[in-house]
Length: 351
Image: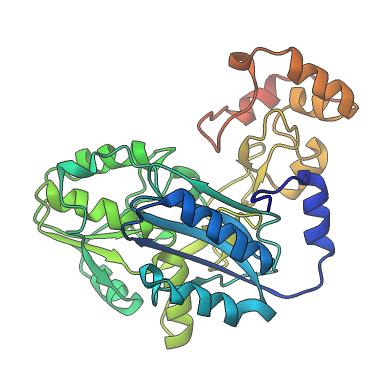
């Protein structure tokens, strides 16, 4: 059996858009010893492919980190099979609050050195000595104390569109970059109550242990992350202290939590919190674009990308083939942060 997908991206996206079955988008993680990650990877791919599950999953010796969408008709058998594995018995599942069933268009399971790239030497500290896990209600209550420090353990493009009120939002592109920034920013606050949060909780597991290792005495984390926070406040009728959108790493890009718009279009400055990837496949820059700019720029970030994206596919491929790797426009997420307003201001009018 071929344990990977061979269908091109455009065809897969077309299939998922035309699909009529209902799907449930769910994420979960667990730090647990996995002796043979490649074996688990192949086993999961065979199981989940047969159940028509789509998503992105990372498997490592230290555990699993999964974001998937499951056909509603196969949900019970998926849960049964997952919990049959003692390593994943009763693993907490975070179900999406906004779900159109189109979160993923293929099944990708990769073996990685770690389930989250953190750049840490796990042998240098006790990674199991994590912070206190707080419910949504406990997190809200802890925020009421003005001495409490709230730290967003997500990347800048995530906190840009949504965050907890009063949270510190480090200007970092990756989790690896963020950890030393947080440590430096809080170096004189080791006796304060620290509240940490991320999307689903997995980044806070490692980050809270890292802070405790460095002498922080009262480290707490939002159990289940923002995803489960929203589920809890809705179930219990609690106020949301998270405003805006929760950025998610799938085709939806974001889940609307409150109607607050705390960011702006990167091209014109209008209030907006819609993340898009540049329509030029050789760029794919992640940026915020309002409907007006999306129409004028045809989904592109700059006039040059707009010009390339308008070319026939054969010519686009020729440009990519002839360009040296180091000169590629390709970027990962938003590590490249061009000033799109300045670029458009200097650009010649587009005919």
